[in-house]
Image (tube, rainbow, N blue to C red; front, side):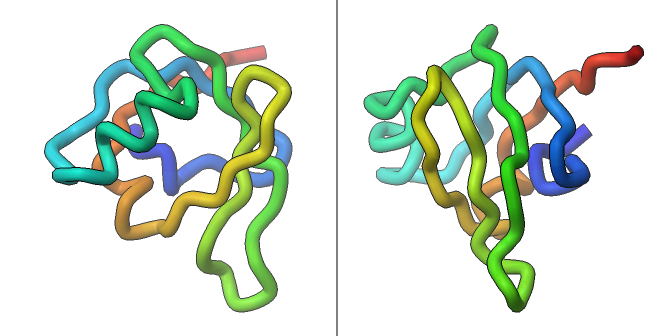
Length: 76
C-alpha cells in the first residue's frame, strides 16, 4: 500500500521509497528509510500535505510524494 493511503493515527513500516528525485535524498536524511515506522499524525485542512511522525519528529509530505513510498500497515 502507499503511504498516502494511511488513515489518521495509523502506523506502518516503510518498505520502499520510489523514484522521487532529489526529494528522496532529503527524506532519507530526515530518517525516512526502509524498515522505519511511520505514523500519520494529521492532514492539512485541505488534505495536502500530510503530517507524519517518524523517530519522534513530525514531517510534512505532499500526497503526490507519499504515493511513491510503499508501506506495510500494521494489523491489530
